[in-house]
Image (cartoon, rainbow, N blue to C red; front, side, top):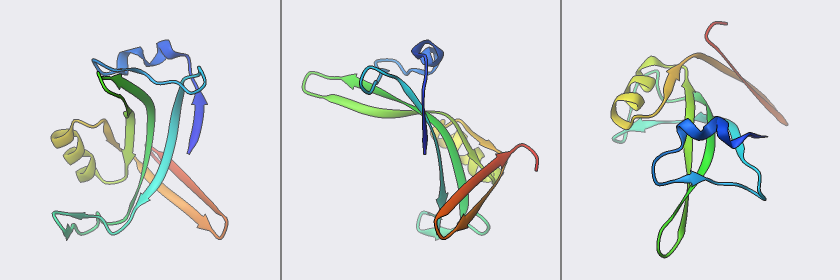
Length: 120
């Protein structure tokens, strides 16, 4: 995970209705997050060739004030996965901004690195 301070006006078009940008100590951030899905299943069934894969996403943070509490959430600007079917299902059924790119990772005892590109 890498966090970057950002000018709030750059995120304005992505902020959902009834929410506001959330800040940390008066600063606004976007996060680049990379991780691996492992042993993934749909309705408790593994989908061949779609059980282990990388995801990289770019996100920022929002809040919504209700009468009794402040609720915090995450807004995804882009989510990258290596399998077209995953991106299609996520966009179609969940309205998430998934795209299909080539991804890979390298892992050693004390380091992990993620790579993504439209072409390798």
